[in-house]
Image 1 (cartoon, rainbow, N blue to C red):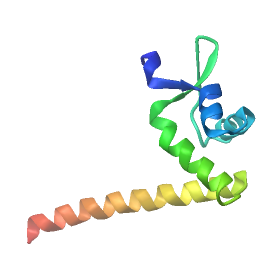
Image 2 (cartoon, rainbow, N blue to C red; image 1 turned 60 degrees about the horizontal axis):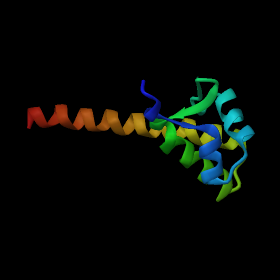
Image 3 (tube, rainbow, N blue to C red; image 1 turned 90 degrees about the horizontal axis):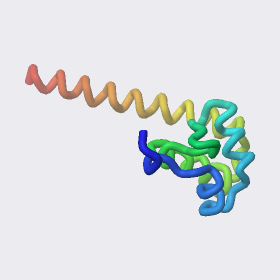
Image 4 (cartoon, rainbow, N blue to C red; image 1 turned 120 degrees about the vertical axis):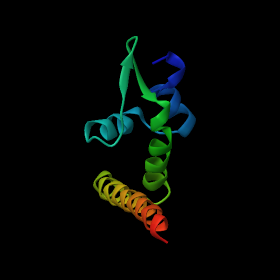
Length: 96
């Protein structure tokens, strides 16, 4: 991947006014992907919507890390069920 596909953790933290150790905690528990590029910790751009959603849960709703994990798992399950429902509707449409 190209360097334009990443944002440094420090830039992300400055822009969102969050401590970098919180981002690293998210990475340690598997909620956010962080890569090291040229000795700089970076977040892939595809992870930004997820990171911003997590930050809103944490800062706006004051949800702790464990709560964010549970909410993220539930949201992933809902998304998977929505995809499955769409596929089933498409298959059902073939028979109508």
